[in-house]
Image (cartoon, rainbow, N blue to C red):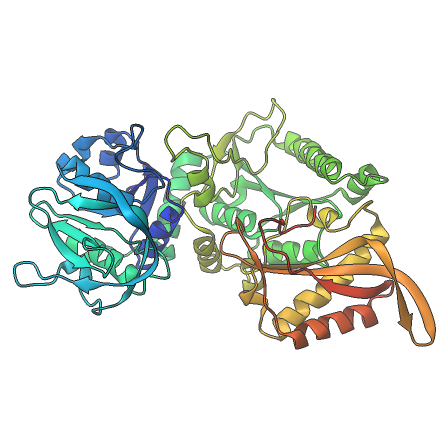
Amino acid sequence: MQTADIIVLDFGSQYTQLIARRLREEKVYCEIVPYFEKLENIKMKNSKGIILSGGPASVYAEDAYKIDKSIYKLGLPILGICYGMQLLTVDFGGEVIRADHHEYGKAELLFDEVSGHTSLLFKDVPEKSIVWMSHADKVEKLPEGFVRIAHTDNAPLAAIANEEKNIYALQFHPEVAHSEFGGKMLKNFAREICGITSKWDMAHFLKSQIKKIKAQVGDEKVICGLSGGVDSSVTTALLYEAIGEQVVPIFVDNGLLRENEREQVEFAFKNVLKVPLITVDARELFLGRLAGVTDPEKKRKIIGETFIEVFAEEAKKYQDAKFLAQGTLYPDVIESVSVKGPSKTIKSHHNVGGLPDWMEFELIEPLRELFKDEVRKLGLELGLPEDLVYRHPFPGPGLAIRVMGEVNEADLNLLRKADTILIDELKAWGLYNDVWQAFVVLMNVRSVGVMGDNRTYDNAVAVRCVSATDGMTATFSHLPFEFLERVSSRIINEVDGINRVVYDISSKPPATIEWE
């Protein structure tokens, strides 16, 4: 089991993942587990501190989320955040009640000295810095031994502590960007209070993961499904760095890829990383099965089932392989366990999914401890090209869900040309890394246009650019009108068969990022 400097017990806050991210940015290795994690598992992590996250519940409710109080006997420093603060209060004999009014948004933090000094938690944090409040309950009575260490105009007990027990608690959320020095507070908890001196980075992770992979795999072979996306590419590169030609990387060309995508993937792995990539050309098979199909869900089903069939057929050649590698990331792991008590699991994650019963592989997921931005850093550490590491997300069904209606070669080529123009212009304007995802959609409508002295009746396309952090929610990117005008002009002038370009200004929700 991987050790962790800091353990976060998750009570279902929408911000919990940010706690781990902020600490990792400070090179402190942090892991998130559900609040009901068994005590023996927590002990095995050999952690030096515990954080109790926020959450949507109230500590005085009958079904309030509780922890094993034996955790308090471990002698580890503890930091409670929002719900975590309220839970610490009641567990140590204090009182929490419904507040007269909710407190949401920004507040100025004011420090209270204890025994003539400001708490170590606020070391190098300026007075009156902005913090982010989001709570409807409040601490009415402090437990014995606890004192106030900070307040705001509306929150008399914005932060409390029992320094003798090394327990600290914050009513606000230091993990969100709105808390100006929240990252510094979390760093202070880790470095100053927990005494963590080790520094975790991608070079350290790479060395430890290579050692772990070698121990797990031994002399066995590992089949790796390579999509060309960042996650699968880094997974493949990491495995090859660890065990060399024991890795069997399989890349399926389904005919639904972006312009020159197959060539880029093959060059990166065969020429840059020297990985013996296996490419399966299944373009005719996929397009043949999609012919005449217009229903979006049916298209997705056909693509998924065909991929499994092709992948399985290729994998049959390596029946001596024991492992199947997936690019599962840490958010997938977190979302795959219920962190909200009796609530249902958010997502059952499986990147390949639906494999035949005969494919009885042991799963290996070397990226399951990393966030997306950390995966990109690891990719650079492994020597992957920057254009591959920082490319935008691309859906499994590929361009098929960006062609409205029937998918055919002619429309795919039309879409590829338009999409390439958009991406090229984003890069030329220095906007590519400011946008989370960008693409062109070929709509199943035609419109009247005028080109020269002639009327046209051609295709319309939609440009979709969104800003997001994880893709769960997104807003349309507020790009310069001059940029959009340039993209529109180039697409209409350079791609025969398109006479109209529109910009999608819908957000997610209620819309999705993709169109199908």
